[in-house]
Amino acid sequence: MQNLHIKRPLKPKQAYQYRGRFAPSPSGLLHFGSLIAALASFLDAKAFVNDHGEQGKWLIRIEDIDRPREQKGASSAILTTLEAFGLHWDETALYQSTQSQYYRDILSNLAQQKLSYYCQCTRSQIKAIGGIYQGHCRTANYKSQGSATRLVNQYGLYQFNDIFQDDVVCNKALANEDFIIHRKDGLFAYQLAVVADDIAQSITHVVRGCDLLEPTARQLTLFKTLNNSFLKCTTPRYGHIPLAITSEGYKLSKQNKAPAINNANPQPALIAALTFLGQAPIPELAGASVEEIIQWAINHWQRHRVPKAFEINID
Ligand code: GLU
Ligand code: ZN
Image (cartoon, rainbow, N blue to C red; front, side):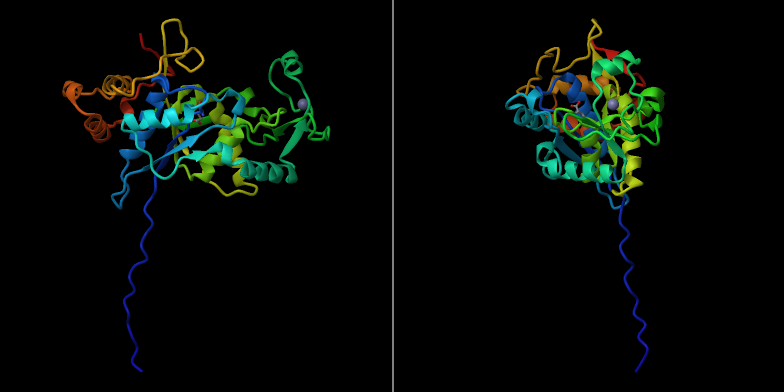
């Protein structure tokens, strides 16, 4: 038999996938501050093109683990606003309220590997020792009843290179704390859920507001802890955009009842958001459609133009 020299097709090289996300909590409607975060994370994903010519993916996660703080109808109102602003997401939106079993599995694995422990300290006890928890209950062997769960913080990571803010150094003491991953009241802690779901959604880039700069240190430590124990994962790149604040120094947020943005007339807020992000929208965009503005913004997105500032006054 003749020797066949079959030329095998080259195994297709997997192109790099950018996966970004916007992760609103449905404790209120979108406001200008959250629109900026949504827009920046969307543009950073869509301006990315891999070597197969594919744009980045932009996912939505509704962070509805804090049921008591949830505002009825907010989730769907947020999604409607994103649509009205031309921010169309890929894949189906993930609701954290459907992830409880996954979070519980992570918690029990951490416990099994002695990477977490129960703590019964009260807020005022911690305040009395200076506000930073000192691992008091690490060897106490409390039961889950009436306890919070804390992570054994082995790494205390506190520095990282931010896409927009360059080198960021977080508060070292806070970054070293054995932080809470399961609350005393039974709710899953934000730090646990956010990292668990950035893993579940294979997020490669987290773009969000500077109000979440400090928590990033803890998230880096949690990623490393999981990766080095039972859940292989890659820590995403982080990028933090300035917070929009008003002259009184208040951050625009659901708490101070900043006005909801107008779905019927999205163009002015969209252009204002681009200006805020340093992207210098051209005057011609004033009469353009939402789709045209978004397309222009994708084509012209430049990371280095995003202001290197933790907050910016907008009035
Ligand atoms: N759900 C958080 C918020 O609305 C954001 C979480 C994140 O982007 O990591 O503030
Ligand atoms: Zn304790």
